[in-house]
Length: 217
Image (cartoon, rainbow, N blue to C red):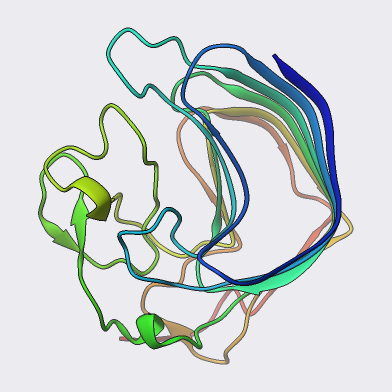
């Protein structure tokens, strides 16, 4: 068990990943708080962990027979930054419960060399087919992902400021999600994207900026 953990007064700069919980074995992770965090996350070479995601909270099986970990009571307070990809909260192994975001300001932009589409391509998890790294999600290490394509595996998607799946109880208050440009990039998505089995999502305290725009391909 890991519980009652606080990360406070942190600056993350020029990183391919931000705040993260990667639970790949049994147990309980609960009562975790990130507070007063400033970040900048950008695309790097796809062999590295992370995918410019400012937030990655995931549980999954690493090997056959693994019992996924429980993740609950996660708090983000006073978080500010810019990112080239969205955040992910995913309970693919076991439903994540009770996540709160208060005074969180995140802007999706594009400024690094890799955001132009250059560099090695990523590979679709399970098939090994080529996919655009931009906007994709990184679930590694995973029993289902990481096959056929090793370090380059991704799940194709869009750069939504926040993607949630298999989560119960998400509350967002006094927060702003935004896209930086007047014209969206082709791989940009929405402020919030909702996957399978999401219950109790309260986004009434969220302001979205530049979510509805024309798209440049």
